[in-house]
Image (cartoon, rainbow, N blue to C red):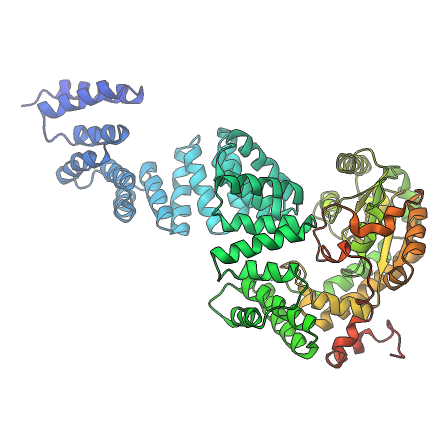
Length: 629
C-alpha cells in the first residue's frame, strides 16, 4: 500500500510551492508523488500544469492525458488539457477538451476560460463571449480575461460592451498597450475620436517603436481629419515600413488636406506601380488630377462599381470617381446616370445600417425649434453663457460656400480656421441629458456656463492668441439657438446659395457614410426647404451678431464681400483675404482643392448641366428658387 498521508502531504507542499512560483521545488515534489504512485491522477495533472508553466506544453499533454485515462470525469484535468492544447495552437482540440470540462463541472471557471479563449481564436465570437462571461466572476482581477471579453465584444460589434471591458482592463493595468490601442479603436468607431486619440497617444508614448500602435493612432488621426499630425506619423511609419501601402494612402489624404497636391499625386502613382490594381489609389489620383481621366482608367472605375464581390464602400467610391471623370469630360447625361447608380448603392448601404434620412424627424425638430426658441427665452437666459467674442460659427447647407468663407476669413492673421468640429453637438448632448425635447430653460445654469467656458478654452488652445476662432460645421445651423445661449456674443455667418446648385452639388459629392439625404435629389430638396424654414426662424428671433453671405455675390464681388466679412468680424482689412488660395492651412472638406484655387465662377449655375434630370427636384423647390429659369 501507498503511504497516503505522505502523498497528500507531498501534493499539498507541491501546490504551495507552485502558488509561490517556486516551480523547481513544485516539480520535484510532484515527481516524488508519481515515484511513489505512478497512477496518482492529481500528481499527473499538477505535474502537467507545471510543465505548461515552464514552457513544455508538449510534455504536459502526456501527463494530463494519463490522468484523464485513470479518471475520465476529472474536470480539472480536462481544463488543463485544453490549456496545453491552446498553448500548442491546437484550438479546435482545446475547445473540445474545455467543453467537456464545463459539462463535468459547470462551476469550473478554468473550463469556461479555456473554452472562451479557444473559441475566440477560432472566430466563434458569440460562443467565446458567453464562455468568458461565465468565467469572469471567478477571476475578478484578471486583466487577460477581460481583454478577451473585450476582443470578443469588439468583433461582434457590441461596442458598449467592448468599451466596458477594455476600461476594466485599464483599471487593472493602466499602461497596458493593447488595451489603450483597442479601446481607442472602439471609441474612434463610436465617434469619440478625441478620447480615442488621447488613449492611443499614451500607447505611442509607452511604445514609440511599435508600428502596430502607430498605425492605429494614424487611423484615428485620419478619422479626426488631423492633417498635420497624420502626415508626420505616416512619414515615421513609412521610414520603418516603406512597403505599407495602406499608410501611403493615409498620407495621401493628409497631404491633400494640406494642399500638397503634387506630392500626394506622386505617392498615388508610386502605389499604382507597386499594386496596379489598387482602386483607392487610382481614385485618389483622379481626385487630385484635374486633367481628363484616361478611358482605360474610366473602364476600371466602371468595372469596380459593377463588381458585387467588392466591398460596397469601394464600389461607391469607384462610381463617384467615374461620374466626376464623365462630368469633367462634359458628358453630363452619362455622369448623371453614374451619380444616380452610385448614390443608389450608397443609399442601400445607409439603409442596411438604419442611417436613412428621416424627413419627419427633421420637420418635427424645426417645429420644436420654432416653439422653443423665443425672444423671451434668449432674453431670460442671456446671462447664463460666456461673454467671449472668440467663437465664430459658419453654418448653412453643405456645399453652400462654407469652406470658401472660412478660407477667406482664415487668411486674415487674426483668425484661426478650426474646420468642421463636432464640439457643439457633444456639448448640447451633455446638456440635454437624454431629454432631447426639453427646453433649455430647464438646463442647469452652472453646468451651461462651465461647458461654455470649457469650449472657449478649447478654442483658445486651437487658435493661440488670435481674437477669432472659426467652427465651420454646416449642420450647426440646427443648433444656432443653443449656440446663442452658450455664447451670446459669438459671431454667426449663415452661408446661402442657389438651392438648385446646393442640391446638385450635394448629390454629386461623396460624403461617405454620414449624409444619407444626399443620395437622393428629392431628399436634398426636401432637406434644403427645412433648412430654409429653420433659417427664417433664426432671422426672426436670434439675437446677437449674424451675417448672411450669398455665394453668388461673393463670387461676383470678392473684395467687397470679403471687406464686409472683415467688418462683421471686427477686424481691419488685410489683402491676404482675397489671396485666400495661397493660405497654407488644413482643409479637410470636399472643397479642399477648390479653396486653393483662384476664385472661379463655373460652379454658379452648375445645375443647368443636369437640368433635363432635375424635374422632380425643381418641383419640390418651387417657391424657393427663381421661377423665370
